[in-house]
Length: 398
Image (cartoon, rainbow, N blue to C red; front, side, top):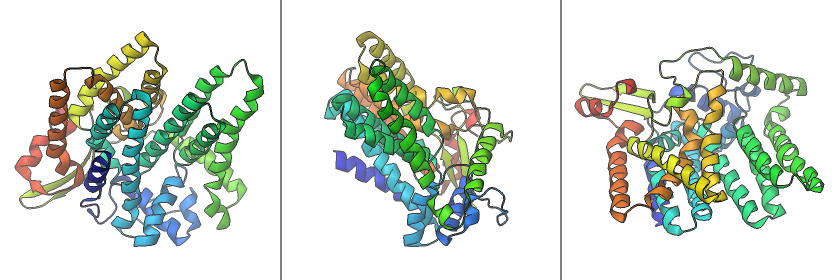
């Protein structure tokens, strides 16, 4: 079943991936900058350069996601397939790591396959795997970091701890939300070693030194192209200023507390034809998310009742990448909730398999039907306008 799920995951992400053929939504920053990185343009890293009309240099996040996407442009050229294919592969790999995490946390292949299958049917994970943006790459590294953390908890091996530090460095080099993971894991492991001060230097190595070194190395091309250390430090200051003081507004912005119930998705793209319309709508699978809410509460209840650290990890993963946004000073969008979605899928698998089998089966079939129904709405497939109008279940989705 696992290979079938992963093949399905890849195919639904890869189909029609070249459409639209030009930049859309945040690709005017990310994909444009990816292409410029392949050209060896130092301006792609700096904040004070003007870009061609309709585009801008994407310097507001660390460069690793764009460097990964640049491999696709390097191999396939500066086209929509080239700047999106890396995220298709990473989005597929993220689903695989949901399987590995679920297997360790829930203990059976049955649980792990259900969690993986549910995640493969989510719309937000799908849409973010089909666009050149940082979020699916960050989510992938978050999942890999949780896998390494869980392995360390199970085996207490230095190798897994060092591996965790390396992955956290890659995550931080993709998006600063990696700090949430660093705080979570360092606090968890730090409390476990509070009475062992001889281990504190190792924790400093894993949670501070290694991530900082990898973060700096992610700017290697910038330094090779002649970037100065002074400008690098000022760039970090500019990134902090941008992400903490941005006062812009957007038609599809939303508040953090609305995300689990999906009150305000993000309309990425629309193409009107005479009798048809194509949309790319960044939203989750409604039935999956709305069933996931009670599943999170049930998993939380079970974690408190059983004091099972494995269930605590699920809840910690969900909350660590959702609740900090409550204090974010900038405008926010539904896709900022993306890293929490895999943990909601794991919680839903855990909850469903404690219900009668027919309930699990019926829920899975309904979620699959919802995926098939919404798939054109997520992927820019032209459909009759009358059908497109049926996707807006809530007034706030328009």
